[in-house]
Amino acid sequence: MTTLAEMQAKIRSAIEPVQESDEDSFEAMTKKYNPILRKISQQTIVSRGTVDEIFPMGGHADQRDYYFRQVVGSAEIEGLISTLGRRAVDENWQYERWLRHSLEHGKIVVEVKQDGDAEPAGFAIFAAQLSVEDYGDDEVEPQLYLAIDLAAIYISPSQRNRGFSEALSWAVAYHVELMVDDLKRLPKARRPPLEGEGLKAVFTGDAQSAGGARFLANTVEKIETNLEHIRFKAGWAGIVNVIDDINFTEFPDQGFDSNEPSVAMGKPRV
Image (cartoon, rainbow, N blue to C red):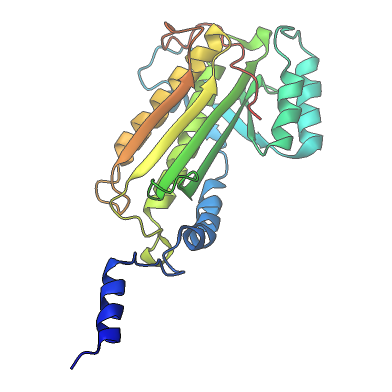
């Protein structure tokens, strides 16, 4: 016969919330899986892009390839600042501050030049990070996030109208594509237990010039196209949900004409 104490214990267990095990808690999940996702995020910047890859619709007369290099460390940052300073500069944009700022906040700096050029024409600054997040909201289930911050672009005035902005858009989008492709290939033992929850891709950036707005629009379009191509239809992570949080307030009507001068996009975000 069941005693009164046993019956009361059963009733309490039925109405009390089930406690998460350490294995399933958000803290344990982030501790286990975010280091794996950070490693995936540390892709090597693509070193070369052909004209056919960067301008698949044609229309670009100069058939020379574009070359990219990630600028790492204070010595290389100062070297790039010195190189750009030897040319005529656009005094409207404080590219030196942007580059130094990137070191403080872990941004990726990628410079670009064309085959045969001795020095880079300019650079883009961005960040791309995969992580499991709930953003401190107990009402929100943990989800897999891809955060892409398009912080800045600068092309020397004498090098504009040569396709460098379009080339940098392509390089950033290709970098993100490699990240997502590696994520899709994770073995089951290293996957966050979020099957079916999908990947939430969040874009941030502020357009502060017409050329910067075009760079933002081009880059977001290329990344979205790549994500649609990968799409995870046969993968474990479900669909890709895109949140476009780009600020185009001052340049709402900018299109995708990469032949226009591309100057600078915006101040690096803290």
